[in-house]
Length: 252
Image (tube, helix red, strand yellow):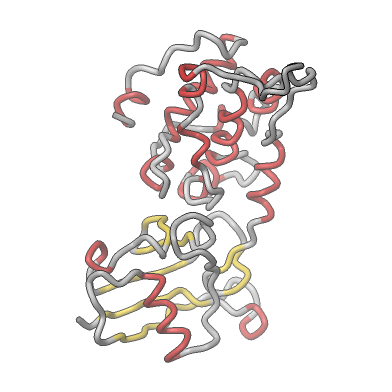
């Protein structure tokens, strides 16, 4: 199988700012089970060594190779040729500054991540019997889905609200906050709800639903955002009903 590759290129040292361009490559002897990441490796190793991209584990765990493939945010290591066809267009994820080719500056994204206190807070003493703080299976299930986030930024950079206003904390940060807000062992849920209740917090979500299909871990992002909104309105995390209507239907 032959593949026509179209890649968005950008080299600030050569061209200056705001002058990206498209470059086309042809690949032969491609199998339908090859991954897009493997094809990018072939382009870099066989045709143009200056091509710049991020990748690490190549198994959908690290999230470093998030990019737009045929207009959709995906992990290059998870997308098979048979899923995208013989014409493949690749470009960097949107809403973050491009450093070179497919590499974006992730610091604005991680600034938002850090702003929601993405860590466990509990100042009470560990049980005297030396055991960990126990939790029921039912309580664990409330936030189990949002523990799967790998911080690839695919959801946040698929969000038009984030494209329009980079100060918006974004879906990924809300998912991270959700994981701790609904953990009954955590003691900082009120602080997180206050942070997300600010103008650039959860209310900038316009429920466009781009984020959920963009997630390579199949996290129900829109549902998590809806639950955080309900918790802010109720002023509590216990007894929050599962969202109904469009939010629930979009994740069914």
